[in-house]
Image 1 (cartoon, rainbow, N blue to C red):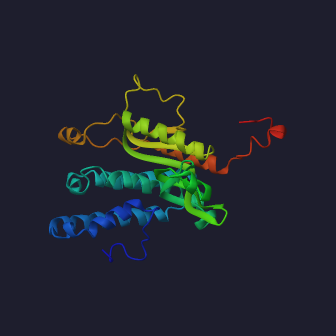
Image 2: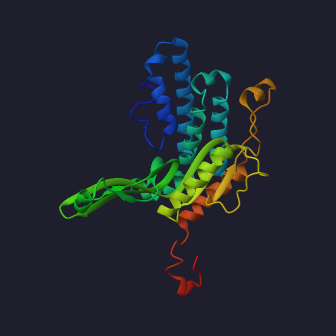
Image 3: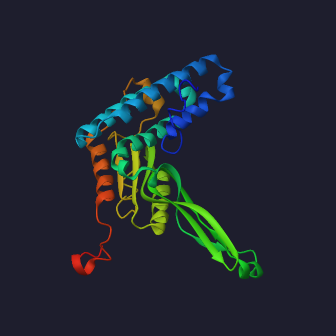
Length: 293
């Protein structure tokens, strides 16, 4: 794998899909199967071509930039849908991680000015804080701080170091606070929606200013039984504007993947851009602006 994912191809939270492929290429069980090894290397080559092209797209015109990123992702995503790739994707692990990495390519121009000051990519994010203690005697010395976290597919946030001091005792913890939190799913069904709804509520208790988005390719949610109105989730996108169809059934009928809907991707880009550039100080400046919330 070094010739495919060497030092020039950074891995980590910004590149969850590349990291996923890297693990598979270096999996000793896959290495024992020559056909699988050749196939995952082919996937790696396709991935690096997509990644190189996505990182090279110029951001001189927003609409053209978003359209080009959408096309590049769609072409690569269609490749991942080929039946032979199922050998590595029986549970859909490759496809959602590709959508996560697409978010980084899509929003990267909005973050250029911030460099490493901003945490970007797949992170466990802060949901709140509470204290525990096994006894009153230990409580009198140092209650133990607890930080529940939520695993988010894509985050634009800030890395913090929390330090709590009591007398001569102290506790330190690394936290990730999200300004934008995005969950990436191949399809949105009732259990996934309920889980996202709860997680959005928890995360917004930790930082009410977080923009929380669910990004899905297909819909498997009965809107006659579940209402999305009033949810703490700010935006829900169904990028292919289609109900979920079992992959095997779709292939049996020779039905291709519905195309991604560019206006939906552009609205996602605009919503995030607006959130990152708008004034967050309405409550503090209400006497000047007349806007409290």
